[in-house]
Image 1 (cartoon, rainbow, N blue to C red):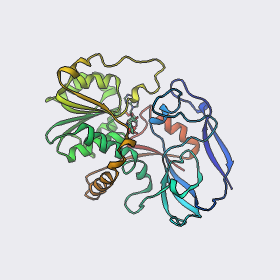
Image 2: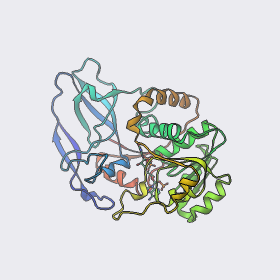
Image 3: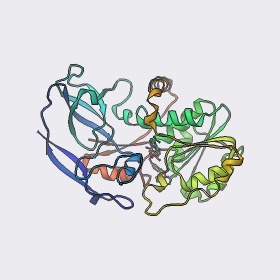
Image 4: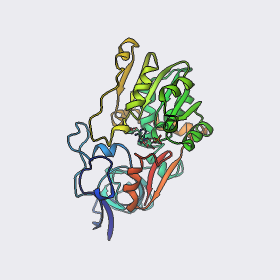
Length: 332
Ligand SMILES: NC(=O)c1ccc[n+]([C@@H]2O[C@H](COP(=O)([O-])OP(=O)(O)OC[C@H]3O[C@@H](n4cnc5c(N)ncnc54)[C@H](OP(=O)(O)O)[C@@H]3O)[C@@H](O)[C@H]2O)c1
């Protein structure tokens, strides 16, 4: 049996293009004892993958060149030589960027297709949802009545951050890159306020307008000008959860840090970076809370679904153009 996979051909400088990727057909091995054969239904594209497309990153191993990329995926077992898996089981694993894979049963995990559609396990019920949960609750530590500001607010992580903060009784403000995103945040996702940072131009003025009592928790997905503008408006003892800095991921020159970092001293701010994989001990709490919130209709989410493995590179680079509302996934 043949299958298709996407390989990284060379490391990009700046935003990757289709030239950096290669779609190839390969032979698929038969599953041996203890192995399963999975047909991927959805694969994830995530901003962190850009960090693995370069060498010398101290905390990520780079993608190997000339072999299939990897990443989150969810699919269906179509052959099994493992006692815990039957044909038809829905599973998640880390063999994205390919249509099928054979692996040991220990490298895939069952998911419940009755709780939510399969793709949700790459978003709200998956890594981005858990990132929002631990980043907000463990690092942001919001208290009822406080103001939480989140950037990339309509994305997979940001949209869940804002809704959890609302559940916790906070006033929630988000920034996003289009009027359609802003409308979704305010009309559907329950944000108290949101603004289009691209058309508004003046971040400082927007934050002054929407956060009249200052900011207690800033959940930073973007870095750069957003981080600097938020620092200027943080309240005493405010917390900044440094989740990501997507504005810098394709930069070809090193950017200077926030010019106003001295405010962190005087305002007694806590700025803390985190990586979700360090929070496995919080997985059960995340699963239980998120399932309950979804069941109660308190969490809404959107997905941008791109069709076909061949379009995965376009889906991936679309993250940096703001092509997605909610989680960007590729349906295979
Ligand atoms: N620390 C961790 O463990 C962890 C785990 C997962 C994700 N993350 C980080 O969390 C952030 C969000 O990830 P996600 O998966 O939820 O992606 P996402 O928000 O669903 O998609 C990326 C979004 O970022 C925004 N964006 C792109 N370029 C931008 C720029 N130059 N300036 C401002 N906004 C820009 C775009 O929305 P707009 O239209 O609003 O610009 C785009 O839709 C990323 O920084 C990611 O690296 C961290």
